[in-house]
Image (cartoon, rainbow, N blue to C red; front, side, top):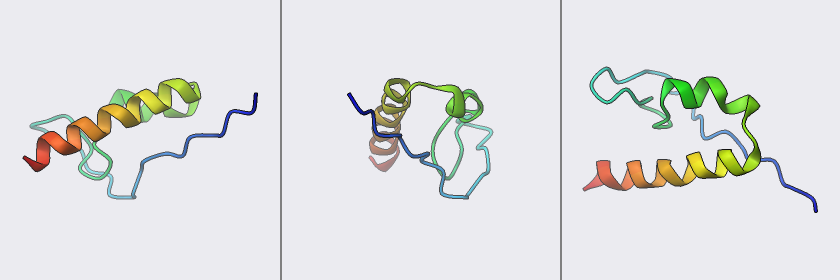
Length: 60
């Protein structure tokens, strides 16, 4: 089965927030950013799901 590549959530605002440990642009951790290229598509999708949760938590 063809597995469509998962695009990076990077939006070129690459600043780490020292309080949260998250990138201010994409909300990933340094580990998630560093490992992204080597992650499976399933792992990338899992990170994207956690980003949605982080984004919702920050919006409330």
